Every structure is written in structure tokens, then in C-alpha cells.
Length: 165
Image (cartoon, rainbow, N blue to C red; front, side, top):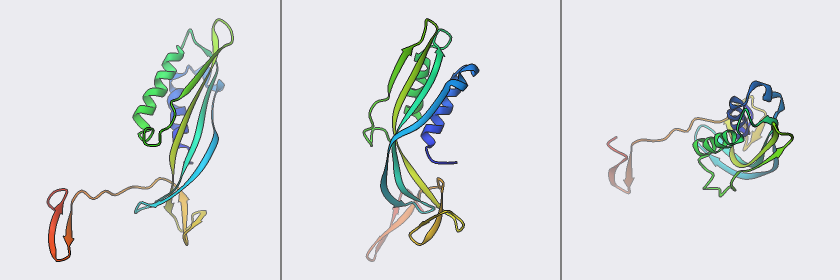
């Protein structure tokens, strides 16, 4: 799977709502992107950068009497609140939309959403990316989180962390 996970996932959520006849008139793309270098090791992989971009979703000739544009907008809002948990942290602007009537039955609906998503690398000896003397592939990695532990300070300890080890 390539990056732009948010773009792909939100596109899927919108498409499931659309009548089948609208699928051919649905498009989504990235624009105004910035590659923010934020290398950070995560144990089983690393976050090399963040992809900051504007995602544009276009539904041409949406039959608004058959599918209320408010349902599409609510789907976008709900998806963002459920899945894009870092929006506030990165102070991303609110999504924007435009409804352009074509006739008394159809309209073009354009939705723009700013995203900031991590670009993850996973070690892979045959991977296409060389970084820091290792080979990697673009892929999310599993993050292991310690649930318990012990802390030693000089000769004092152990002090339990997060429960009894």
C-alpha cells in the first residue's frame, strides 16, 4: 500500500455512500504538498517525514435529490473525527466544500481537506530506500508499548512502572 492513507481511506468512505452510477464521476487527488522532515525511530521502523497536503474530493453531477450533499459532508466530518486524531495537534484548517449546481437535479460537490500524515519506513534488506546505512520499504510498522517495567536510579530500585513487573 502506498502512502496517502488518509486520502485513500476517506475516498473509500465517500464512495461507499455514493450510488454506483456516481463512482465514475468521483475523483480524489493530492495538491499543495509539503514533505516535512521529521526522522524518528520507533523500534520496528521509523517515521522519516510527514506528508502535509490538501486532499481534494470531487463528485461530478451528484444527484442531490437522490443523495443529499449533507450526507456526504457528514460522512467526511465523522471519518475525520474517528480517524484523523492528530488534526488539533497540527492545527489543520477545517475542511472546505463547494456545491456548484448544474441543473435542477445535479450539482458538482468539491470537498478540500488538509492532512498531515506520517511517512513510515520499515527495515527491508531488499527495500528500495537507502537511509542511514540500511535498506527500507515504505510501510507502517508495529509499535510495541511497554506496559510494565522497573526503574533503577543509581543503586536504588527497582521502582515499578505501570504496575508490578
